[in-house]
Length: 170
Figure 1 (cartoon, rainbow, N blue to C red):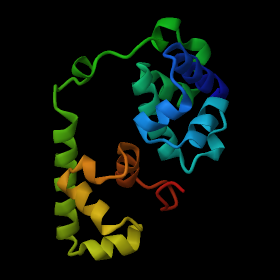
Figure 2 (spheres, one colour):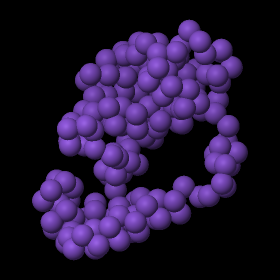
Figure 3 (cartoon, rainbow, N blue to C red):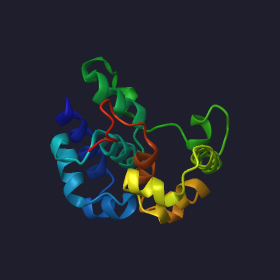
């Protein structure tokens, strides 16, 4: 299944006449990770959370429906997906049911993180010590400052729920 996802991404990239370096520059995903994704070697990626984020970013750049690729990843349903399911995704405006701006949603999540941290009586230094996220990134998350993060993928991964067993996906 992972090889099929990689082939879909690679074919769409080549149709758009993009190199892996072009994709890397646009998505901030390292070339060797893109090569692994296209080869279907998902074990070469740092975590499942990052894989999903990378797939979302890559699919979005190529105009593919990211939800269908993620569905393929989770359920292995390539054989059950009709070809039209692999066509470009609807525009961002039509894909949000509430019409809410993703940036304002990120700000709202950041406020909730800040409120919870303060409720627990933790300083940013305490959170840094336990999560290994640098204070400047924690501040960016709490302020909803997307530009203060290394990439949207890492931002999503930083606030993702931990895996069973307590580790956040390494």
